[in-house]
Length: 479
Image (cartoon, rainbow, N blue to C red; front, side):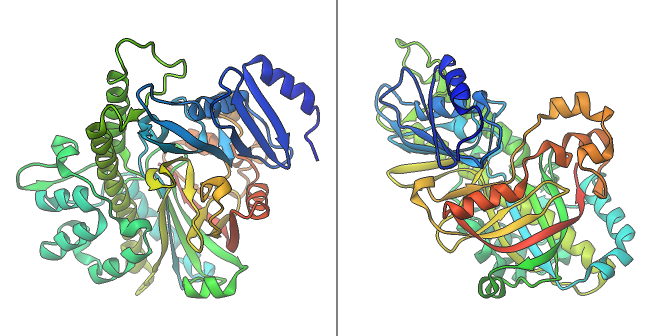
């Protein structure tokens, strides 16, 4: 079935320089004057809004090519597709050959999801909820967390991520991690995408975080961040795939803890630096591309491509450890309040990252890997269900899936108009949001997001993922 007024919509998009067709919940888009560029496909459930700005951003991304050599082989977008502030649509996936595109990842390098479960009932949790929340507010909001590290540990973190960080901590534990079970953390690294380790270079990290010796007190580690980032307590409501859920340690009635964060200021530092470098290296005798998206070519600057990928990996390693520490702070507080709670890791995966796949690299911006049999975590809003999925490795969508529901109203729109709307209109009735700023509740209200069930259903139908378990929110921490 086609959307209402489809022909009118397509004519309007054509006036904006976009050649768009629609079939079977998929929009195909290309710039009118770029017939050699690959056609980008967007999977959107029927009835979802189609934003011309986002389509233009995706078409621009598909059209990126370096004049010395390098092109986009394939471009697509997941159903949480919406415009991005930096010219790249959220939900974009692009496969490149001979070039990488720093802007396609942006500054939130290795933003991703992490999920733990615990054998604790809702009643048991709510009985001591206030005590738990006050402790977590201290750690997440007021800086009572202690993530002090030696200079050597910080360098290990940036160089190879979680495994080297654990090894350094085993040699010299510091901060609140002295109370952690480091052997458990080491075993759990197998449940992190890529083992939580990429080939970084500590010398590419911000100078203040890599001193020659002494202790490092980094204010960014163990922090949630702004925007749609969160830490949420959930309940496993329904298991759909019992065999996989059992293998992953997930059962109905358990409590779950979902974490959404990334590389914080380290990602901003590296992402911003390399967007500028890509622009500077553009051939001097050629005008800038109209999209202002600048690739790095292996044909003209192979050393810069290698350096960028290592810099991105350096920030990604930091993002893996940041999510681990957010979870470990929570797990330590759980044990203080509720006793000996193990809360094992289910999985941790990125959704803003460049990885070697296909003919060269696949860059995902607000989309997560969904390779065959790989766990996938797709959150809803803080008033809706979240889902633990399993990837089906669909090559039509570059083995990817959405990283959430996707915004349908901007933060600016919510901050401007949301304060005048009722809790019911915003979808906030019954939502337990822990934050120090009331505007955060409004900016991230459920009304800002697309309906998660439609997002899940269309991806299942497209054979990108299958449902393993459904989780419902209990309370959400928003910085």
